[in-house]
Image 1: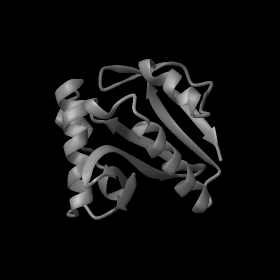
Image 2: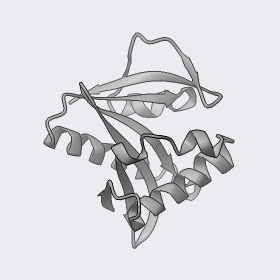
Image 3: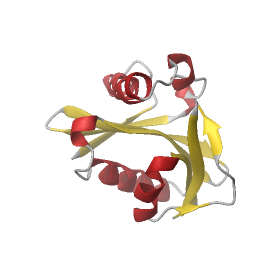
Image 4: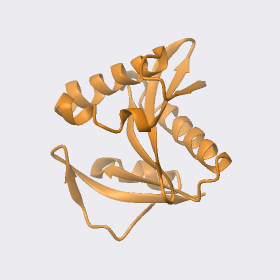
Length: 143
């Protein structure tokens, strides 16, 4: 698996990230497009996982005082439960640690909490919250 990262909102990598997010969040989960693509696009690092040139998954890292906030984690349906998400999250953690981050935090959709726990994330004290009409819990990973 290969990983590309970009801040360039005109790049092919970013366009691949947007296409995956459109499919997973907007089409599958019903998140409004104007909530999915937000004011943080230009401030984030956009990652895409590829296999044989095919874009399979994406996530973005937004710089924060503690390290990075992981957002927009999405794996296309045919590639879920095949280790793609795990590989992408491991790559994000390696990238963040190599760039001096102490911690990663994310807002996990409630149904994905177990996935993140298996990767070493833990629930924070923040109570459950709703984002884009979907219940979430904040989770953190110490690097």
